[in-house]
Every structure is written in C-alpha cells, then in structure tokens.
Length: 109
Image (cartoon, rainbow, N blue to C red; front, side):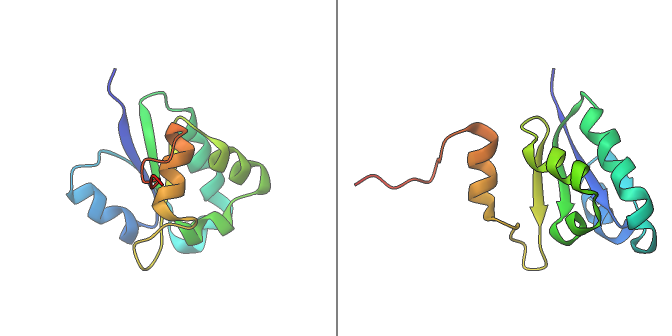
C-alpha cells in the first residue's frame, strides 16, 4: 500500500503543496490554530494512508503538550517541519535519521 503526504497549516502554507499535487491537507487559519490545530494533527496521525506529515515549524508552538509529543515521536507517519528558510527545526538530516533509524549522510573516517 502506498502512503501519501499530508500537509497541515494555514491555507497560505498548504496551497503550494496542493498545487504540487498533495491531496491530503488540513487547512487551519492562523487565528484558529490554538483551538483547531490539535484536532487536525490527531486526525492526520490516525489516517493509515498518511506516511509523511508536513507542517510549518512555528505551528508546533500551537499544539498541546500531548499532541506535540505524539507527533514528534511518531515514526509512521513521520513529521517533517519547514521553517521560513526552508529548513526544519532540528534539520532535515535529523528528521530522516529519526524516520529510518540511520544517518544516511554520516561521513566515514
């Protein structure tokens, strides 16, 4: 079974991904994130067809402690966060290492 990418965030954040062909998304307007973001993330985590969740790294601050711990500890689906500079909090390298369990970019001595 193939898994899909899901994007969670403001309509402005999700639009680019939707134009690129991502079909699973949860739009949560900025002024509603404190009330609705937890539910959107929990629904996406429980969706067995989702393999990767993409969020803006600043949105993690709007999650409750329990939801944040669940999403950050999730292996499947794996969370990928993007920041304003395109890099995720903790870096994409760390996120890949957490997802697959090995450091693909590790240099040999």
